[in-house]
Length: 443
Image 1 (cartoon, rainbow, N blue to C red):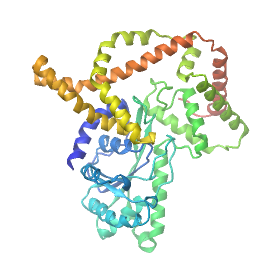
Image 2: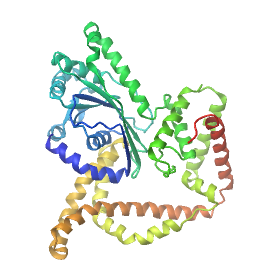
Image 3: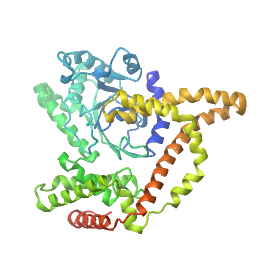
Image 4: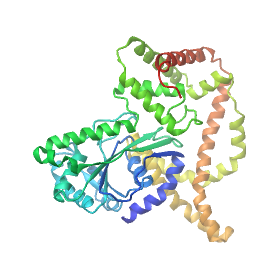
């Protein structure tokens, strides 16, 4: 295990648990090694390898897009066990460079170690709960390794489904679901007769095994309806409009079941099209008026938006929030500005902010803690404990800001007449329950 990989595996645990407080792992593999190619979906760019490399037990070498292997980044990526993969879109001759990469991947598997490959090959700019077509790379890499070993050792393939509430939303949910593995050696006869046929069959099997591990809406034009229904029902994976008293695993299953139901429907059905238009109209109107589903739900259920909880939180946590802001506001703003200026695609922001922020905030706060220890605390262990507690102070400061915005918004909405909008919500909820859930599963 290389040095930087080990450091990330240890210290990113802390950051990930702050960023995603509710994490469920299903059928998680127990072995550190195992000559296995893990194939995962790729919904959140850099966050995906950090998440799997940190929270899953197997020690893996990551297959990573070649364009980030710049002269500056190359030694850092080597230390984190990353290997480049060249794609056709990387330019003329790029794919030919994979011959050297395949030698490296074969050596990794020959040594009993594991590979992690994101089978879709890229991440959507807008987060969508669906699986994009799986590339043939994982199967090809596995068979090349078997040929290099003269088929004398077994190579396995296992799938991982990553399910985020919303990858860019702080304090969201994550479900990591693992499949059973299959042995690639079982395809030896087919491969020797027709390599392309074997690669195609394995790729199809990988895709078929990945789909049940995630929420997969086949037609991406209907993915928004899935999200809207989950918000109204409050029993899915949405990061805000969800009943968190429902166990995360159950909400994950609900999300998958709804997607499966949509996939089975005739999407030209008039009732379904009418529902889609009604939901689109409701949520567009919400956005135009600056409203939010979480407030409308509370208003519909109780008749008034309660502000007591927010006010109590704002008062009791203000000293801790101020302490967190004093320590971390400057590094937070620096990291935020750097990330959003450097990475134009928002899909990179959460992972870069978390990893770079973890480093920058540590470098920024360590001298402060050292000074506090020298002139005030005079206890090394207590100062170390204080150092590791600072991120929690920062989290309180961030939550305090959210609570303050909620408090202000609720006060404003309590002065508004929302009866007509609440009636629209009620009509939409009734139609959803009648059309989708009347004869379907029940929680």
